[in-house]
Image (spheres, rainbow, N blue to C red):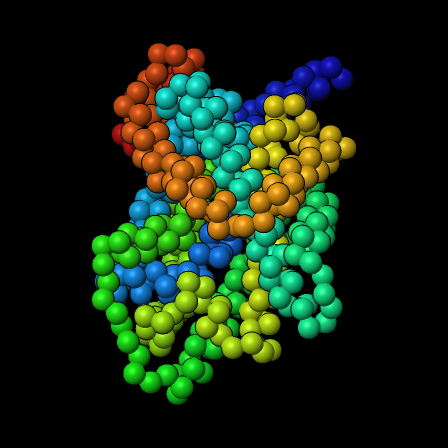
Length: 419
């Protein structure tokens, strides 16, 4: 009996080792997670948000040459996401603790690239950015819902802030972003419906537009417009968390390509017609150019739902890192509920105290959001590559090195290359 049990255990260990080797040979992973398409949906749903409403006005500040800036900003953001994904793959290759699901990947990249102090810099920047975005989402949702219900009943703006935060609080109790699939799909669907409805509304205004003027642009207007365009692509800081929940993290680049193509398909049908039809008279918020009625109410409802669900995606990385600091288990428990309720309460307090989203948006957009999306990714990737793959402080070898050692040491191992 004991021999059978011992043989069974040896067979199990051999089977697990074979699965591990084969998974690495064919660039696969044995862990569960979502696919390339699922990751692309999460990325697109988070990035394609309120930035699209200001894109037509940004184009009026640059003229038609702004389309080149939009393309360059998209390429810049895609490159940042690509090298950030590669940075995480480097961490997995060099250090064993990152080869499983990790709750705070971006700070870990900063720590390994620069030093322990950079982990705290990235952590603070992430928390400020994501909590600030959470505040902005709450305020925008409150404004839109108040505008939609103004004809039905009167309720103050501050009350709507409290009501929305109360509704969002229990929804934030889900674990990782992987459990928020309904929020990602809903946010993407509502964003697409809102942009398509804006496009239709702009097309319907063509017969009414005469002598459209396209004013002269200046360096100042182009600079402000470029800042708006960059903000529309500044969600790269969320990508390490999404990549960490993928089944095959090395396929992350494919997900980013799909997502940025999707973002352009969402942005351009609103940006180009908005400037072409309205010219220099296009407002800062393209929604203001649409006449009040059923179509505008529908657009506002879609945007409100989009912001509502994007809020759940925004605060999740903050919650996961705080839970890791307090050693809260990853399964559903009361400690997680308490921590996330406190986070929503802090967001509510800030939103209630400073009910002007543009001030918070300008603050985080010009500071932490720029650092996390466009400065840190190339810096960290450069430093990680500069250190080299054979880090003397690293006790473990890369996947490839360990696999080569196993195959060379064992005469019966699989041959990697034909003789």
